[in-house]
Amino acid sequence: MQQLFSAILLGIATNLDNLAIGLSIGLEGKKLPFLSNFVIAASSALASYFGCALAAVCAGLGPWLKYLGGGLLVLLGLWPFFYQKAPKEEKKQPKKSEDGPRLGLGRALILAVTLALNCIPASFGAGMAGAYPWQMAASVGACSFLAVGAGCWVGRYTNARFSGDWLDRAAAIIMVLLGIFELIAP
Image (tube, rainbow, N blue to C red; front, side):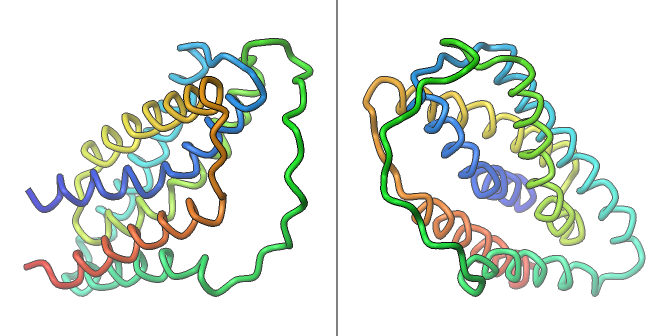
């Protein structure tokens, strides 16, 4: 049960960026085809599986790696609070996109690789803490699909504006809580 809870929390934490990507796509006035969203989610799930599986192999080296994994999650979560971002520009009106009213498969592939790479460090840390790779992959993939789709819908139909800083901090806090949970759980 602990691994499932951890997988769900990590799935949410690693996909808040995907929500922002979806918002961006929606604010551009684009529709998100099912295939494009599926490619993004499947890539994130695959990267999470391999990151967690690699760590699970390493975790067999000793029980102290569980603490190292939990500590890694805490450090990953704290990272956004300690590095400086470039100042944000003034809000601009959404640009009309160059590739029409739908997100093209080429752009979806670029997003898929980028967002998949984002999942690897957290999945590796979770794997070192004892998470099951298939649970991580399922959670990250499902959360990615839902986050990108929901973000696109919200951006497109309500013209909502969310602060990227808020999403970064929420993801960081969830990551820290997950790391602490991994450190204190039996």
